[in-house]
Image 1 (cartoon, rainbow, N blue to C red):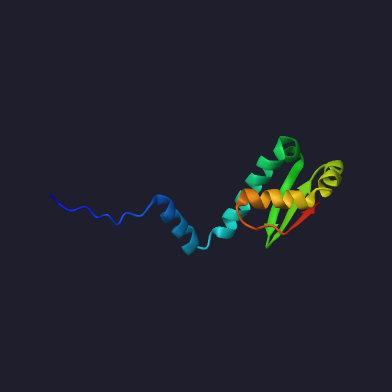
Image 2: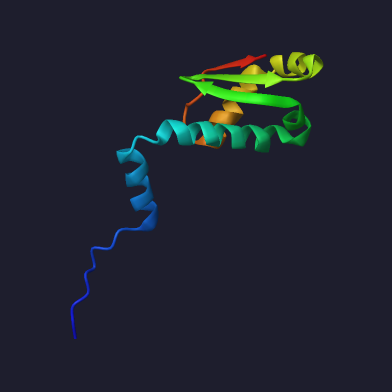
Amino acid sequence: MAKRNNNILNISDALKDFVKSNKLEKGLDKVHVRESWSKLLGNGVDNYTTAIELKNDVLYVQLSSSVLREELSYGKEKIIKMLNEELGKQLIKKLILR
């Protein structure tokens, strides 16, 4: 009977290596931020969100409701903290609501 090669790489490790070697982290972070925004703030806020953009460590969120923008501006620090916890790293340092 032939010997098996036990140097098998876990699929999650292989994907992580692929992402790292092709420098895809920033693009994936942008996608994860959009998903986290929708998940944490719910459908009510998500329906009024027209654009989400992550540049460096600043998250730009465009809202179609000025009333909602004013309400969310009172809890910017809490929103940043919740998003960073959901993402698992300190990705966002500043939130700008437009």
